[in-house]
Image 1: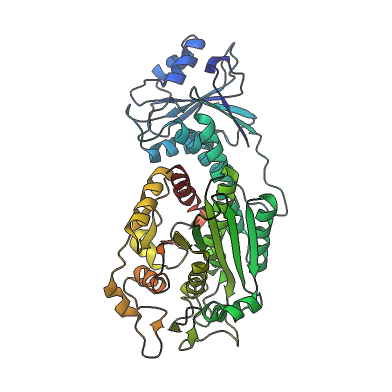
Image 2: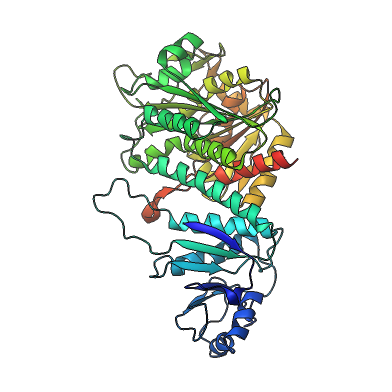
Length: 492
């Protein structure tokens, strides 16, 4: 989709369709009033007939606008005449693009930046338009024998009187591009998106952006480093494991980097502790953390953020095999700590712990890991917020603030010392699971044993990284959250 900003008066634009708002008390938005005046009261006449009530997300397409540069008008309900929440603004945008994306016209002007939205300036409102529209237009067609129905809508003009809209457009394009990359990689089947394929995508980023440098460690490299925990997970697979390292150098040479660690399980059958067959196809999404790291690094490079950022992605499969690690095995991690494997399906923490130890060599300012780590987070929080835990209040608060701006919600859970009791082992320094209670918390407590030397936060995205059911597919979260966090850091 091609996006642009136009600061000219709405009635002077020549487009197939204009999208404007109406409140539930039948009051027109400023843009709708401009068009009403330019059409001799056509819109207000339709509204008085009661064809649209202005309830939140209502839509009505007026197909014939006589003697006007605008050929059609889409009215979108805004609800009560008061500032919208960011969530409701995004619902309005989703309703708008849903109403026109399968239309037979090729251009539209979105005149919704004049709507009052709580805690949102024109930059953020413009950004949200691009993000929501791009999310709705995304299609995964790589594995279909017939091409999808081609959408005729090719051009979106955002009507705005404030020049700050250009900044919102740039942010929206970068974030939605990162989201689309993360979604596409996650939606690919595991026989295509292997650890090697994931590494190739990281190398492509380095080719596309001069500020990114990519290094890929293979099994021999990891053996030399003593990554016994990560490699134990990989033993059951014929696909060689990779540790993917991306360095984005946009800040001062000596500035400490922000390190993002993303779980890259390209398929997780559970290993010897085999998962149930129902829904196992969705375990191709166990690499959503790694995909989101790639998407976030791409967005940062697009925006040329003045920061140093490192992305680390441990990539492997977890399959049952004669070589696979077994319940009761004791592993020696890169840190030297030993781990008793009580459940081979708790493998994400086993590959993350060695990667977190590896992260220390970058002398990080902060480390943020993101992983589809526990089914327990769905029980605790559902699919609305990602779980947030960490050893630094300031870092966690910064992520919460960024999540509120980006509309990419998180909810903080405690990381109290008492939970470490559940990870005690008779045979090793740690057990890799802590029993049925507080599974999301004990998983993070396990990781906390490998993060004592730096400020660290953990995002459990198992409930938010993909949708299930008829709408099955990746969401691209938490790329918006992480990019907003980086924007905040760059602007601090």
